[in-house]
Image (cartoon, rainbow, N blue to C red; front, side, top):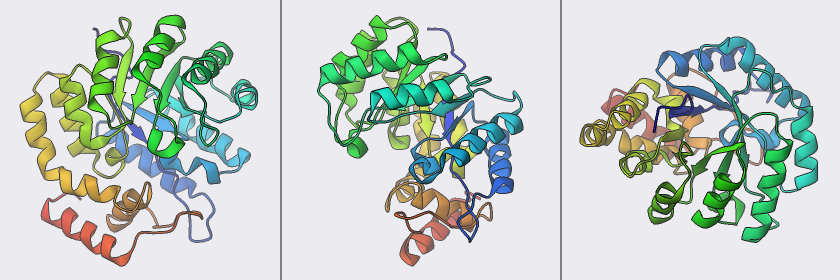
Length: 296
């Protein structure tokens, strides 16, 4: 399989906030520079890590507009567009300014827990409506529904506009099944930073990563080694990052990654309710790990 522009590591970007909870546009620009200069292959805007459910429609539009303007062609951009009302979602996608966007990332419908057949028809409708390719996003820990390997491969085979899946089920056997049965050139991307090397060793194409926000050079190097088939070296390079990556998710995402970025001086440690900053215990742990493994 030839290397696709959405292979490798995609940065699932945070949305920085000021102390008054307004969007910190200057910090977003500097974060984009930080991850691109650190070696990320593409940017993912308006995903889970961006606290997108707490952004107004106007803020979402501005996040995407600013991201496109500031990235300025340095790497591809993926925009998050998901929901649990298929009709509303297709209307939303039609209204989005997707010029200069490589693909949309669309999460499985949450809360209403559709069947596999419901998921199939939802994503077929989304793919019909989207002017750009679609990356499926399976994250049952957040949505309450697991899209099976069979459904993923069926969608991949039945719609040419569905080009990839971000798989965050945590089930390596399910991911292996997708890799084994996918159509040619369909991308399988890890949705779990800690599983990236294992997924790529099985034949996956990369990761959409939270950790690359905080440790872009170190984490991008891990993914680069894996993309070259140097899996043992990639696992060795990941080992010093492992405890810090686990800490990023200890109190939820993006709680941990914002704590790490604040410690390193990139952003203020501000989240919008219902999320709150990590505990003092987490901050002290992160400070120790950043210092101990020279992650700054």
